Image (cartoon, rainbow, N blue to C red; front, side, top):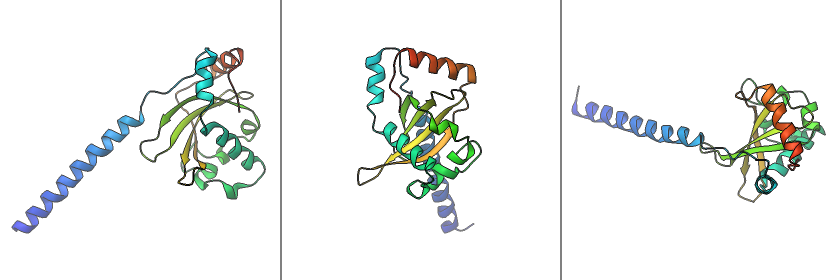
Length: 168
């Protein structure tokens, strides 16, 4: 092995090592604590003032009207199993939804927000919402939350209804 080849191999290994460190940090940061609403209306109202939630309602309404040209392709079609609006029954989207939490999306920017539909509370969903340079918000992905079961989801909707949490 020549000196140049050895230096090249060492440089590639170093770049790979740094990339793994950076990506590992971002993955851990993506698991940041979620802001869950409580029965305290003041706390719930704080979550309800996030601009991402009205944007989700607007995007769902566009989808229901068949106006998908205004929506991100990945939001509509998904990219994997259990993602994209096309993957789920439209009756979810006709229902008002409650906000569950928000967290930063460290990999792609914007926020991941959790929602649950009031009239069909058997699943919860994560929606990635990104703030564009011009100030508009764009819903970029729609994914089923796998770590909440139907019983927990229904109980959450009952509690949020009783606490008069905002819905969109």
